[in-house]
Each structure stands twice: as structure tokens, then as C-alpha cells.
Image (cartoon, rainbow, N blue to C red; front, side, top):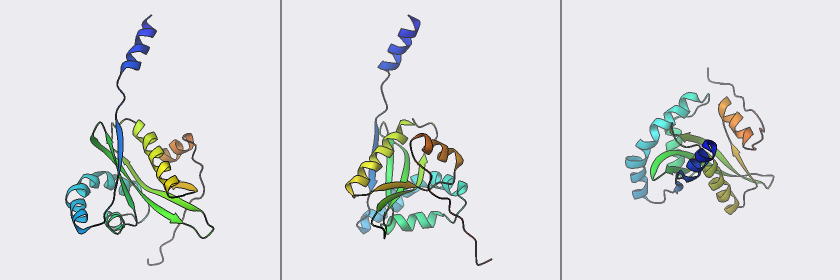
Amino acid sequence: MAEELKKEEIEQKPRPKVDFMRYEIKTKEEAEKFINVIWPTLVNGLDEIIESSKGDLSRGIVLKEVLNGYSNLWLGFVDGKYAGFATTTFNPHLDGLNFITIKQVYIKKGTALEILLKGQKKLFEFGKKLNCDKVRMVTNNLKERKALRRLGWKPTYQEYEINLKE
């Protein structure tokens, strides 16, 4: 009986409302709003991503890519409150395949993991609208790679680089 009661309590617990918004910058006013209102909200999460990356990622690169329209910015909300973001690019390839590449993902600590699954679904739907063949994600984080494998993602290649200016 105690197990049944717990199950009932779980079933009655409200699920968080998870929403996503793709933020597009088409006008000077939208760019100003982005820089003055949205960008300050993203900076802490972006700094965590930059700190854990081993490449040449910087605030300036992400800002330029979003402002120039090279990267799409996706904002995630749980129960109406900002919960994280992702940036993506559309990549047509010479071999005829089209990709969406997920470049950065940040989820605020303490956020329901449901946001990850619903965010993935939203990006897949967006990719299908763009007639994409695949979605790729770039990550150097071991925990993220393990999570992606559990979600059905397959590793493709590991990128290496060497600095020629040292």
C-alpha cells in the first residue's frame, strides 16, 4: 500500500513546463536588445562552457556569430524562467548532406533534465524543417559524451589542432 501511495504522489506531481525560443537578430533594434538584455543573462553559462573547452572559444566569437546570423541562439525556459541556452549552425556539405551542428549548450544547475530531452526534440524538428540529414554536437566534455551515447548519439571523429604561431 505504501508503494502505491508513492506512485500516486509521483503521478500527481505536476511536470515542469519546458519551452524553447529561437532568437533571431534581423534589425539593429533586435541586436541592441540582444546585447543589452539577453547577452548579460548568457554570459555566466557561456563562461562555464569556455572554461571547460580546450579550443579557441571566446565570448567575442559567440557574440559575433549570433549577431552576424551565423549561429542560431536557442533560449530554454522551465516554468517561464530562463534555464539555459544552446547555439547551433546550419551546415550544408559538398557531399549533399545538410547538418545542424549544436555548438554550445548550457543548462543552469538544478534545472530539470527534461529540458535536455525536449530541447533535443525541438532541434530535431527544426533540422527536419531545414531538410537536414543529421544533427551533430561538438563536445570535449566526457560527461556530455557519455550522456549523448545514452541518448542514441554516435561519436564520429575527434578533432585535433596544433598552433603554428608559437
